Amino acid sequence: MIDLLVTGAAVITMDPARRVLEGGQVAVDGGEIVAVGRDLGLEARKAIHAPHGVILPGLINGHTHIYQALIEGIGYDMHFDPWNWRFLFPLVSRMVPEDAEVSAELAALEMLRSGTTTVSDHWYMHTDLENIYRVTETLDRAGLRAQMVYGLLDRTFAGERSQSEFMTMIHPAETLLAEARRYVGAWHGKHRTTVALGPGSTEDISQDLMMKTVVLARELGLNVSTHAAGWIEINAYTLRHFGERDLEHLNTMGLTGPRGVFFHAVWLSDREIEMLAQTGSKVVHCPLANAYLGYGIAPLTRLLARGVPVGLGTDGAASYTYDLWEVGRAAAILQKASRLDGEAVTAEEVLTMLTIGGARALGLENQIGSIEPGKRADFIVMDFDQPHLLPGGRFAPKLVYSGRGSDVTHAVIDGQVVMEDRRVKTLDESRVMSRALEARRDLIARAGQETRDLLAAPWPTSGPAWRSLAGRKSTEAG
Ligand SMILES: [Zn+2]
Image 1 (cartoon, rainbow, N blue to C red):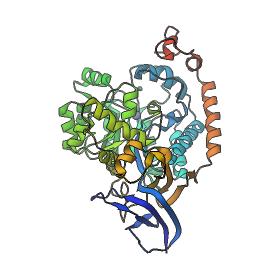
Image 2 (cartoon, helix red, strand yellow):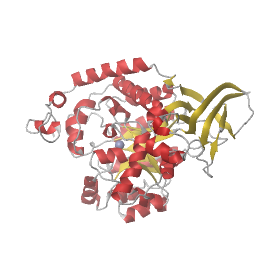
Image 3 (cartoon, rainbow, N blue to C red):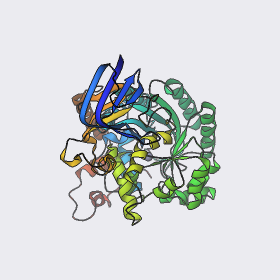
Image 4 (cartoon, rainbow, N blue to C red):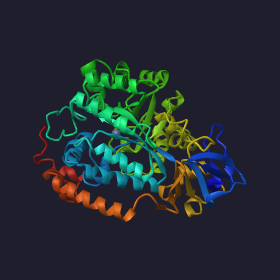
């Protein structure tokens, strides 16, 4: 008698042979996948029959900032600098642990409903050093698997206005190193959570803290995960200060290697792509957020051609979604369009990045990312009994080009049925929504005039709404 037996129309295993088993079953015991096949003849304490369901590994969101879940829809259609200084900081620099918890609940609900089973959250919003504990506890309670990236910023955030009143997430290097160590001790390897260390970017952190972070990560055997070459200005910044491009500088500082995880990786030279490939470094590609902010389109096809492990991420509020199906589709479509090549990225490559590729990027490929005996039981079921998912063709292109988060009916994480028939069992959905609404109102009430102006801006006669406020004095101190 095993714990769980799930039967579907097909199992997309994402195993090394990429087997697709029509009418397949997945057997789970003790949180682990114990068998995959047809007519396994096993008895289970719980059985799920999904005759129209396609079973595939749970999706892996390799990079996000969960604290931004509460604030979408306030400042929008902005470039990165005003997005940070006029929209983001005035709101989130006042974040308290309660806000952190509620944002994590809201994000967790959206992630579980849309098929994400593992998330890597880059948390640097240390306006209160307890924030990250509340977030981690919340994700744990929701049943998600997490790789929390402990953010370390001792200078500023995405720019040079280090004296701004908004830089409440900045702490001295020694505080951050001690706090990171405390957090690793509390959470690394506990339940389904692992921890990585995360400098914000080369702009945000002193050389001294960057070096000490690399040393600490080596001592503790952790990934170092950071934003790299995400926006064009950062290459100008690192060339001016260090005489190197951003990724070159990260390489000099010792961040490249099998434990180096680089978010965005847009503005790369051929030499830097080679550097990533030669060192065994990993990339998390965030095509929607990059496109939305006008950051550009990462050289995905060249990274894949060089064998760099690539996962996909939503990033924070700039993608306006936690639905990884949207992100996967954008990854393919943007490459096809920009390279004038309909074969640039395939549906199978997108499914790989969403599952086993994402696992490899986070260093979790021995545990998750495919449906194979011996791996932890993280998988989802997609309902193909719908007009936009008429079965009978090949599954991969329909999943990637037609699939949506709302097609996910079941989510199993570490053997636990976290969502069944579209009902999330680990969170009280209506309570999550009402708490989030309340927290957002409260956050806005505590924010300054800048935020109230953004919300009250009239429908624009031309251009983005925030531009109509451009002549008014900003409350930021810069
Ligand atoms: Zn990011």
